Image 1 (cartoon, rainbow, N blue to C red):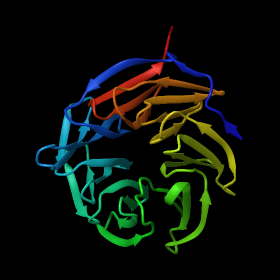
Image 2 (cartoon, rainbow, N blue to C red):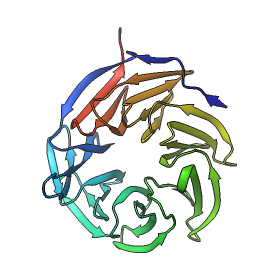
Image 3 (cartoon, one colour):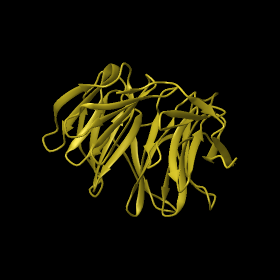
Image 4 (tube, helix red, strand yellow):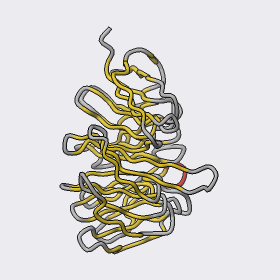
Length: 289
C-alpha cells in the first residue's frame, strides 16, 4: 500500500520555542529529563572540524575536537560518534571516554546492552565492547557511504547501495538476507513492535512487517527522510531541505525550517527539530488555532 503525496497542509503545526545555538546542531536526545544535542562545525578557512555535546536547559557544554554526528542514551551515560571516526561517552557533566574506532567519518551508533554498532562513510561497520573499550569487529560491508545502522535483538540492519537493506545476524557477524525497499539510499532505520521502518533519500518511508519483511505501507514525504519517529498520532520526520513533516490519517502536515532539518526528538506533545545551518533548535507543536 502506498500513501501518496497529497493533502499537504502548512499551518497545522506552530512554533512554540526557538533556541539559537552557538554551533550547528545535527542530533539530539531526551535523556534524564534534559534535552541534549550534538553539534558539528566546520571552519571554512582551516577546514578543521569541531563539535560538542550540549545540555539545553542548563547551558552546559562538553567540547570535542571533531564534529558529533549521532548521540544515543545508554543507562547512566551518553554514547556518540564523531567525524574523525571516534566513539565517545559522557555523563551529565564531563567527557568520560573517547576511543578511535576507524579512520573514516562515523555516521551513527546503535546500542545493545554493552555492545555498540557504528556505521562509517567508507562503507564499514564496527562492533565495540563498551565495557572493555575495544573494537571486536570492523568489516567493510559496502563500497558506498553508510548513513545509518540499527540493531534489534540479534538482527543488525545495514543500508546497501540504491535502497537495499542488508539484514545481518550479530551472533555470526554475517548477512542473512538483503531486501529492496527504496530507489535511493536509506538514511534512517527504526523498529517498533513488529514494524521495521526505513526512511530514504527517495523521500519515502517504508513500513514493513519485521517478521517476514513484507511491505505494509509506503508513506511519501517531500524531502529525504533523514530521521523519523512513529508516535500514537502519526509519523514525524526531519526531511532535510523540506523541514519538519508529520503524516497522519492520509494527511501530510509540514512546518518549514530555515535550513536542513537533521535531528528529531519527541518531547511530550512537542517535537524538537535541528535546523542545521541556521543553528537553531525548533520546538514544534500542534496549532491551537
